[in-house]
Structure formats: structure tokens, C-alpha cells
Amino acid sequence: MMLAKTRVRNIEIVDRGDEGAAVSFPRSLEMTASLRSAFPRCRWNRSSQVWEVPGKTAAKRVADWANGCAERLHELEPAAAIRHRRNEVLGGFSIDGARVSFSFPYSADAVAIARTLPGARFDSRGKSWSFEPWSLADVDKLVIGFNMISALEKARVDLMRAREQAKIEQDQQRNAVLRHIELKGERCEIAGVPDGTTIWECAGMRGNRMVVLGDDGWLWLVIFPRRPADSGHQHPAAPLAACRILATNELVAAVKPRLGSLGAAINLPAG
Picture 1 (cartoon, one colour):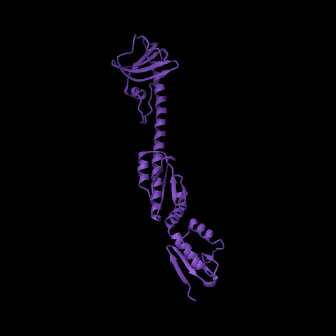
Picture 2: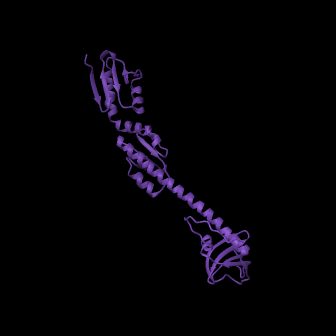
């Protein structure tokens, strides 16, 4: 006996007459849930790899269900595929029906990528992005796009950490140079700030400190007594203390701020 077969998109239906109908389709959690909801008595046949729906009119009823699903297959197939490929995405995402939500910190480059992805939509209230793949090819675009966005964020975080580490290292180098000037430098009595270029200054509990690269070739560390913020004077008439040492490019580079760059360690003179 020749069994009648019907195909609706990627759903195949075999009419078994009084024995019901056999239904097969590519693996999909959504399709399976839809079938079991429509036909609670259906059973999975592991040996033949089909769903079996009992009843004399099962083939017609399944065909009606399949035709109804055809309008939503663009939702069900990609959603199942992207769930299956979850481990390939660097960041986390969630699926609600056909829509895929993927959150990421703002950056102009990340937003530019997001706008090119299938069904991209930005929720201004929730400050989140959602996407809607309509085909399996769209799933590839989402996976690649999500990973590009995640890679951008990782690069941004890595750069921020590198800059923080560079600042810590330079602060350590600068403090070493300041101690070196105080311990090994020549103490001087001066009436005011030496002529030259101020390359660093900082207010602290012990007073306000300033490093000046003098026009005379000396590197000066000038310490002023602490003044109240509302005193109206940036510095008193005379410094509290001043030390100087012959300037070198290495010492100047260690003291001068260099935002966002990595500094090389310096070797201070022994003794």
C-alpha cells in the first residue's frame, strides 16, 4: 500500500490511514513544543525518528497545523538554531519567541555593528537591543555580529586596564624620583618658584608639591605649605622647602604625566 505524503515547507506528513499520521521536521524545540501542544496524544518513535499522531483524520489535522506553522517557520527555525549555537557566542543573549535580545555597553563602533544585524531594534526605555532573524543565514550574521561587539568590549576593557596599570607604574616611578630628589638632591633656599616649566604638581596632606624643569637645567622639587582652599592664594610668598638635581631625560619622563601610554622602568643612580 502506497502511503500518501504531504510536505509543508520543511514538515513532512505521512498519511497512515486508520493508524494515524507520521510527522517529521528538522530538530526544533519550538516546533516540538507546538506539535505536542496541538496533539497531546502524539508520541515520538525513536526507531523511525518520526512523531506519530493517532486518529483516522490525523493527516488532515496535522496538515492544518503545518499550514498554520508555515507562517511562523521563519521564527521557529532561526530561534532553534541560535539556541543550538549558544556556545559560539562570546556574550550572553536571551530569546523571547522570535526576538533575540543582546545587551552590551554603549560604544559608537558596537552600535554601528548592531544596526547592520537582522531586525535590529533599540529599546530606549530598557536601553537594550533586540534582533529578529528570519532565516538560518541570519543566525550566522547574529553570531558573527554578537562576537564582534563582544570583542570590541573586551578590547576596550583591556585598554582601560592597561592604562590603569600604566598609571600605577608611573606613579611608582614618579614617587621614586621624588624620593631620590629629596634624599640625594641639593637643598636650596629660594624666594619663589624657579623659572622654567612646571611638569607636575599635586596637593597633599603634607603640602602642595611641584616639580619644575628649570631653565638652568635643574630639576626642582618645590614644596609649599598647605593653605585653605578659600584663602585666595595658590602658593604662599616663599616655599617651605626646595631640592634640586641635574635634570636628565629619564628623570623628566618619569615625572611628567603620560596619559594612556605605557612607561618603561627607570634606573636611578646608585648611592
